[in-house]
Length: 289
Image (cartoon, rainbow, N blue to C red):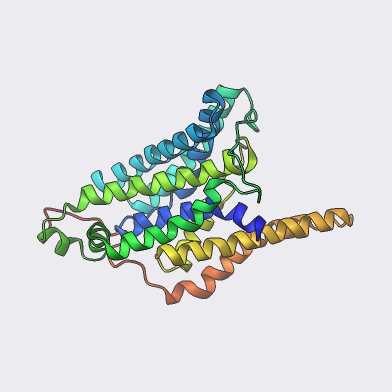
């Protein structure tokens, strides 16, 4: 359980970011890239400021900036939302690698960064936040006027507009919020778990977060539960890999694939029985009829 609570926060925060964006009607394939920007900015911010919490704030801002680009392309210029998200992931892959080399002179890892302090159980504050935020997000989305507006623009944007809701600004705000959450997820990796930025981050966890969102049926609690499930698979493969290494068995590669294989299995078995928000991925044309 201790390992699960360590590995779950990046997936939980990124999955909640996906829920926020897609419940407002904007597909967000770019979570992987937003996490990558967030992880690098968090490590750099922590190194230069000496504070891991400044690093987390930098990660959140970097994720929001990346999400702003996605919102601009998707909402202002009506670009295909899936293509925009994929492009964002590719830009993050190349640009962050360049920044790592330019800022720290390394193509592999950054220097060690100040890490978040841990309690006597070995967990950081973000680990406990990953338990509380999904509940708060659920209450906000289901029981507040603001949450109702978000759900309305994701299901029936034209009807929402007739009630005076500004659809495009609200969608843009939700996309930016999804970037904040994904950036915090990336920051949790670099300053909360590893203590530095690794060029492989987030190593597919943004896509696993998308799978958690789908498996959780686009709900905060469902997505968080699925994220914990995938984190359990990650913790299991690490334990198995360690045991096999100790026994001098060369099977680590098989178990490294376990979380990703489980993600594919879950999607294949459950995606046909889930329904995305009705207007998810559908461009909104204010001047349309």
